[in-house]
Image (cartoon, rainbow, N blue to C red; front, top):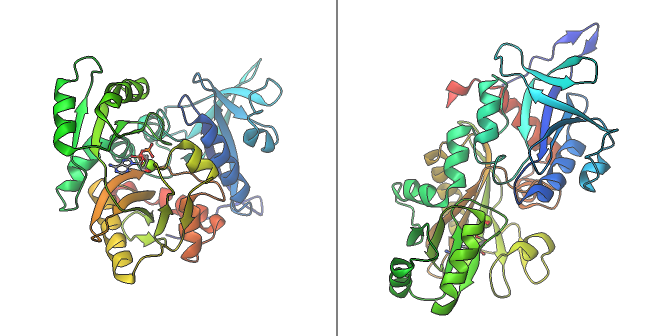
Length: 364
Ligand SMILES: Nc1ncnc2c1ncn2[C@@H]1O[C@H](COP(=O)(O)OP(=O)(O)O)[C@@H](O)[C@H]1O
Ligand SMILES: [Mg+2]
């Protein structure tokens, strides 16, 4: 859809994009890096960033300082921050700034939560933005919440015929009889993870029974439910998806691990693992992965963008892992990397995302 850039006093009107960053999630610092890259790559001829920082205990501020401070986690200071809130009044589309003597209102044309995990990627912030009637970049409430829940996402995706790992959800690290029985049945090694988390927080590869209980305990530190999953053999592949109804796909990428799993350290340092984009797999497997990514994206009601992660087994079967509705968005992150390999630059992704946010929601 073409954007109608309004002329204001002879000048081209730039769209004001509220970029939300930080938040009370274990992925707070990842969000700072993603938001920094998003702000830096916004096409300034068309868009103006309105940075909204959320502290790790949930306070909102309009951030007026140098964006380098976002990257360095030095943004939260009195000189650069004005307490802020979104007006819930659907007609207004305003960010309210609580200055000492007065309340100022900033007009917002679209909102882009660049936040990962709880209270940012899980549908809660999306709900607030949708309630306020502000065009939202990325997935809406339902898809965000579903994709954050690894168990419910698996159940829905399995209805499309795509394979998912065998799994059991537990709420308790004390009464583990059922967990032990299930684990014996699927065999070790297996994975224990929080049902709703990200960046591999609380994930353990469990290779023997004695490690099961501590692994459940750890997962339950991050969420009220833990999921026990059979370990899927093979490689991890991802596919970047962009679009509302017509979908554009990035090149498939592949994570090559030297052992263990893709834990927090590996994700952000790639010390012993590598990411290949395009993946070193056959054209036919790539085509099937892209098809599966589209099916999964649609089954979960995604909109705007998402990264669909899957496994490719040695027999070349595709097994669904998870959808990240706000994947890492730094210049070195997988989503921009997959799109770059498909010929779409970072600023172009952002342009398209904002256009997609402005499309009427009923076009899905
Ligand atoms: N069932 C599984 N089989 C094999 N590896 C897994 C499985 N589940 C998780 N992993 C490994 O753990 C990593 C993190 O798990 P994931 O479900 O993607 O959680 P997160 O949302 O934290 O990224 C994956 O990238 C993969 O390396
Ligand atoms: Mg993952």
